[in-house]
Structures are given as structure tokens and as C-alpha cells.
Image (cartoon, rainbow, N blue to C red; front, side, top):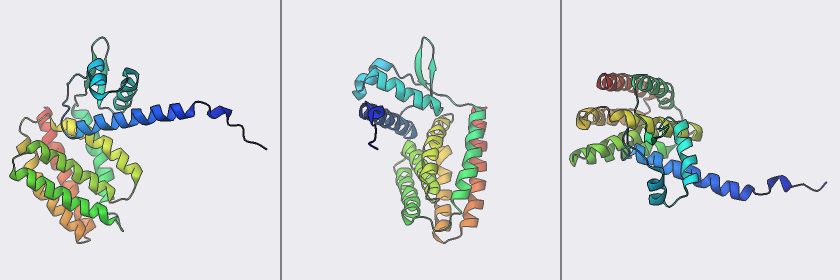
Length: 224
């Protein structure tokens, strides 16, 4: 029997459009992870569409994706804003991080490139500390934790962690002193990376659990 492909009519256009929306949302998410878009920042539809060279319809769909991820909010009659997180958000982020990261760091047969990325992220943070580039230290920290999840070798977990880390970057902004927030964790990241490299994954998981507890407490204190 000959296949009837009439149901796929127009699918190419839809595919191209979906791909564009996904790439656009990914680019905006990356700018949030890098700290370039701060909580409360307004994203005027017309200006953003013109700046990025996309249609306003495509931008609206990208905003909807980011709103679903909890990264932006649409306020009626005002527009789209980068979301400001509260204490409940921080607690939920860290619940997710404990479940995902502490399991991932115990992974056996971790991809060698993920282990190498841990060390590269630590090096990037150390270089940023030397230059007192504290925003870059925060970005390197998020890169480190993405590499921890990559130890599990699951692209689904990697995608989940991208969204979690974007929210985490928004939480970082609650503290006015990024040096105080990030500097102590550069050393701790290095210690965890060394444990992973030595195959001491249970010790790495214990160190990471204590690390996450301390980081959560600090962010919650900043929100209060």
C-alpha cells in the first residue's frame, strides 16, 4: 500500500519555525545563565525582536517556552520581565539539585569528557578569581555543576540541568556581594573534582551534599 503523506503537508515550515523558537529560547536562556539578564529586567517585545532579527511572533513563542521554565513572567499591560525568585523557588531548586547532582556524581563509567570538563570549569573559575571577574566566577560555577550532571551521560538530565542552572543564576542576584557568594566555592569545586578524578565518588557525593546545604542556606539568608 502506498503511503499517504498528505498529513505532513506544511510540516517543513512548522519544523523550521519550531527550530528557530528553540534556538532563540536557548540563546536567551544562555544570557540568563551568564548573568547578562538580571531579575526584574524588562524585555520589550519590539526592541528585542529588532535587536535579534526575529519576528515578534517567534519571540512570543520563545517567551512562552521560557515562562514555562520559570525564567520570565508576562505581566498584563506591562510586558515580559526576567523573573525574580523567592525562597520557595530556591528551596525547590536545591531539592532538585540534591536529587540529580548527588546521584550523577556517583556515576560509574562517567564519560571522560565530562570529567575533563569538571577540571576545565575549576580552571576557568580560578582564572576569573585572579582577575576579580566575579560574574565570570559565577558562570564557571554553573559550568562546573552542568559537568557534574554530565557525568551521568544522560542528555535528558543535561537538558533539565540547563533550566535549573538558569533559575539558579537568577537566585545568585539576591546577594549584593558576588565575591562573598562565589569565592569560597571555587576551592570546594576543586576538591570535588579531585575526588571524582580519584574515583572516590561516594566521598564526592558527601562533599557535594554539604556544599549544597551551605549554598542553599546562604541564598535563603540573602532573600530574607
